[in-house]
Image (tube, rainbow, N blue to C red):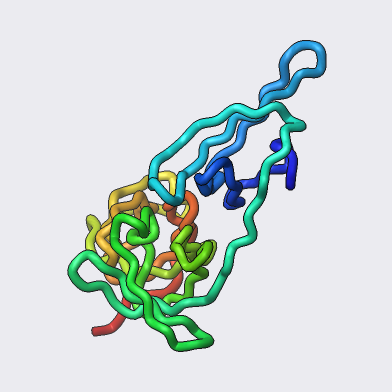
Length: 192
């Protein structure tokens, strides 16, 4: 059991028959030392978003999830296929259950998959991934490395992001998987 005050993003709690994945927590302090915790959850059974408000000292049942390393193999007909790094077991996950992970996942990427009683809860990506820019406007003369001038670029996964003006098509960039934003340019153009 934990109190609502100690709840963190990514933790799963059980309320009734529902498993709730914590997405975001806000602390609201009221008068006379009253503190309320507003939490946005993802119901991992019904796949819906739920907002709840708790007293800061309210007890919640936290759930320990099974967590395993899986390698992404390939995508086929709205399914994503992964292989367990220890048992070599293969699983498939529907595209709807992948959420935003589909924007950043490429073959051979190692991810953590959380399960509860063999039910998928969450696919956890690395903090940042290296992806190839497949399309973007050409660089503009006089753009410097300060990154103030941005343009849209399409990544190898089909995801569109804003990148600094000096980044060009065919270059690799590091992307923050939590925010979905550009972090840095990795290396020169790929030679085909």
